[in-house]
Amino acid sequence: MNGADAIRIAHLWTQVGQRVVHRDLNLEVRTGEVMALIGSSGSGKTTLLREMLGLSRPTRGSLSVLGDDLTRLDRQALEAHALRCGVVFQSGALFSALTALENVALPVNRLRVLSDQVTADLALLSLQRAGIDAADATKLPAQLSGGMVKRVALARALVLEPELLFLDEPTAGLDPDHRNAFVKLIHDMRRALDLTVVMVTHDVETVIALADRVAVLADQTIVVAGPLAEVVHHPHPFVQHFFLSEIDPRVPQNVEELRSRLGCSSV
Image (cartoon, rainbow, N blue to C red; front, side):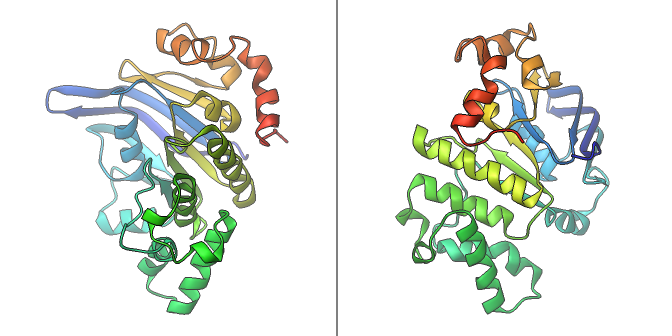
């Protein structure tokens, strides 16, 4: 981690009609870290994620991602910027009529510079790196388990080896065993590819296992951002409910124990 900011958000406001979604929101995501963004349903997490992806624009304020001011980029520049980022949506968002291999090849095809064979080879390599066997590469999404769909979506997000990875509820819908396996995969891929990760999640154990820092979105702004051992003691009611009602209140002492159990120990 070099201490620089991969994402810098300053005095951001988002208003939809008369509703204020974000009010004077500030957040920095450091290069090389995993930042977990948590908040209650309807707090504006998805809207903020869309803004960080360049899919929508805030009403005012500054939003810099990988050095690009997304509030000033035109459509062509946003498309070029998007190639530096990968995203895994909650449902996987795979195209149902395409095989796993064809889904993963989509970002490569957008470049329009590689042959079909090279594109297929890159897609297969990314699938295998995500734990999908070659025999499953020709299957349609409906033929894959929920855990496999998540892995294919991750393979697609990482096929171009982006600098920044966005994860939207990455473990939603997975049983505990598949969740833990997918968390371990994200942990390993993050280290292998030297990724910066922004993760929206409601799963406490995923936060503990993966996050270097946690940002809490509540009351239309970021009420606290910092290491888990500090954030967990913040007095905001959502923070206390999110952590202390679901896990042992000694969570700061149990972080490394849980990470070790999931195979995600800190180095």
